[in-house]
Image (cartoon, rainbow, N blue to C red; front, side, top):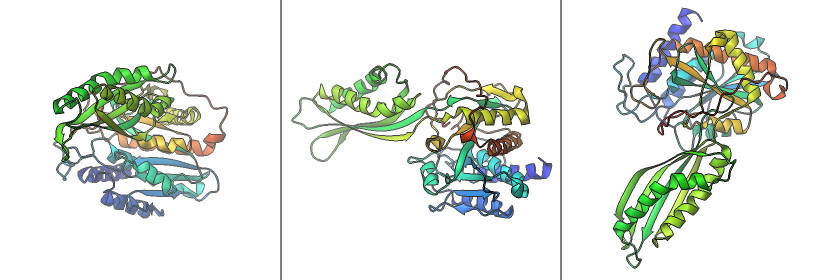
Length: 409
């Protein structure tokens, strides 16, 4: 990448970072992305919702390979003292989506001049609302971004990896995510009293993590985290009864656990509450299954990384407890997610994702562009779904990253 292109990309990244927009409000970011793509002679299409863009490079009749970036920010205060600090109090790009967007625009800049030489088409997807429920990936799929797509790839910033390195994993690389809402109620005629509802909720909070894990049949995977939050107690409902509510998340390491957890959770909660003659109502939202990297797709991606960075650049990455809505694309087509090292070389540690102090070493931008460009070109040549003889990238043991229930992928 020449210095002029890199300078342009850094300016774009800093502009996005300084002007964060949360889920489904990314109108300025959408306009910036679309204008940049038009400037490359491309024809971007904005999602029907008004936020989010997708765009094809090339006109060939061969396979279509998609590269996805997410564009939304978080309701987190920017704690950094940098020239590109967020100008919107209470909001910032604390998960690296500004970097993801910039990298995919960089791929567009690199490929657009050679569009007629491609063996098919590369589709750039700039997805809104990754941090939202329901997520923007569902909007993107409804908008047709997967039409004719053979494979889809993405990357995610990793503050645990040095710039110039890439984390690769075959199989599940994130956890599945379910949110829940619990309502405990009773009337004055019941044996329980208002204070008892607090005690019952306490029993749910203490007993549920272990009970839910034990409820899963052997071989069904495991629940990695059950976290209760936003507990509100002793609230009057207006009809003489009492109400205590809680919400939280269930994170699991397998699709089976993700599918079965709500039913077991509801049954256990009913049993605990019923012992106190308390009514329990539970509601669930299945936010996303685990991102599960396809072995053949990752063979292509691993080779692309090796070709541009060398084999020493790859580090094994554990399955994280973060959720990532990229998983919904993989319900339809094969693909994969890699972790892009963004920590400055020699730095021992860096602020984690979803922290107001999170930032990246901008040297990661040309690394990400080169890796994603090489992956797209290699996938076009390989036509991933038909690839049956690829060397599968080595897996790593199913270690789990330390819990960070707020973090994304």
